[in-house]
Image (cartoon, rainbow, N blue to C red):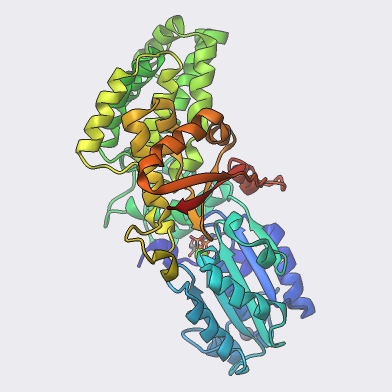
Length: 502
Ligand SMILES: Nc1ncnc2c1ncn2[C@@H]1O[C@H](COP(=O)(O)OP(=O)(O)OP(=O)(O)O)[C@@H](O)[C@H]1O
Ligand SMILES: [Mg+2]
Ligand SMILES: [Zn+2]
């Protein structure tokens, strides 16, 4: 069994990094003040489902211990495995209105073994609009013994009407030090031997997600062998220094063709692109450090230091700062991108283009991508099926990816590369009612809303029987200042297009 599954905490005490949430939940268990709708939101692998399961058992437990299920009483025993009172549902696979109606129908049967019947609905943002509507009424006034726990990584995709009816808990990215301790615990319980210095490496690699860190930790285990630093760096896909130097040089000299060649070379070896981005940032930071404070601050082998010094001579402070900035902002995109390599390449090209206006190499390269059949916009996982009546008289299905993909292709062929880069970078596109909605970060949002882009969109679909008319809308997110919200702030604009078919 995977380590992260095997070590899913059974009590609140073993959940790490979410004390602000656990305090409240424990308090509710102890005071027996249970709400009827909870919303758990935050990055993947930070404990949402885990806490939902613990809470569901705790409120049913006959004698909770410090707010957690005792594990011994009749209720705890009855709710241990599969049971009728804690119902877990994945909205990603059961998102239709029928499924929700089915749930609603069964609400009338009271719990069998405990006080509460708990519905844990994972990935709740995936429910179809119809299902949301059916759900709303129930959420307002469920039977007294019913508790809903909704979990989502993408709170901005939830209707406000749902959010406002729930008690909301924002799960935070878990600090690397805590994750490290957890990995040690797990390794020790498994009797796995390891070098001490692999722990921070593994913990950092999780980037705040306990599950990710544990599953990387899992991948490093070899039956009967000690885990060493080299094993881990190998597995993490830490880029070889030479490759980073080459990519860095290509970017900094503004050579778009070389940039793509190098990025592709690194990516094709199956490296984790967010790790490559980090390596690149840390190299650029070293160069910046050498430039501003001199050689004495640098660490590493003589060769490594020399490599840094050579670049410090060549690069300006400004160019270094922009490289660092551009690659720092790509992290979230890489995590959610379906094709991290292309997202990474786009970023690298953006960085290189700061120094170069010659785009012929890019065009050539793009033609090649196209021949190889790589789709630039691909987040099929997020598309919802089209309502049947919209399909009538039209054999072309109305899907967001399809439409946006055609737009991107159009830019690739006919319009400026900058539009192509921006369009290609969008992966939060979806159909909502009859609108195509694109959620973009602030800079991209400005481009998408600009007049030249609008004109280009119109040209793209002119002969196609489809018009994309702008419905301007700006949704601000990220009012909370916690780290998750910090990340969400990137999604600070959403552009709507009304799709009109002739
Ligand atoms: N805060 C945490 N403390 C301890 N272990 C955790 C924590 N968060 C996650 N884990 C580990 O990661 C696994 C997955 O966590 P969980 O299912 O709770 O994540 P999630 O937030 O629901 O993620 P997703 O959004 O992908 O559903 C757990 O089985 C557990 O091993
Ligand atoms: Mg979950
Ligand atoms: Zn109990």
